[in-house]
Image (cartoon, rainbow, N blue to C red; front, side, top):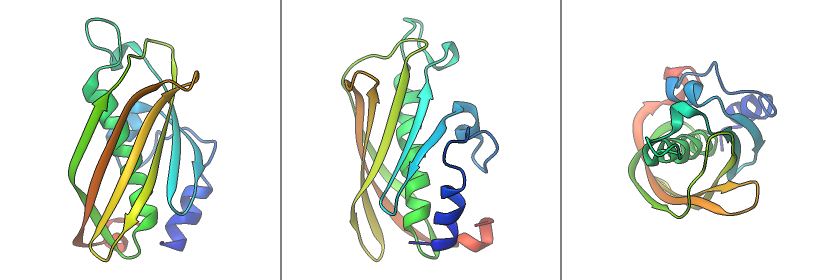
Length: 149
């Protein structure tokens, strides 16, 4: 774990994520709820711009939420180098409508020297699962310090 990055994210708990390095995260306008050494939780509210023509959460946007929360958590879990997604396997289990609040939790399942394995779940306030994912992140040669962390 990168202690400096962990403290940075801890200082953001309770804040809207609208001014970070990822334009996608900024667009989603989530609120960082919790940061741990091996997990991150973010809350999103479904907006009309996040929906498909059926007025339910678009699968691509759900995938973006999952990928971004895993990415945030992985930056914290990484010690020196940026890691990049090599896959994102998503199961869509129920719909979410405009105005519904969603909690997205990424949890580190296995940490290796070159590969981290994550699980991530989107839940409604009722506890019902909207989508779940697994992802593997591979170490790159890009130092976190070189990209502003």
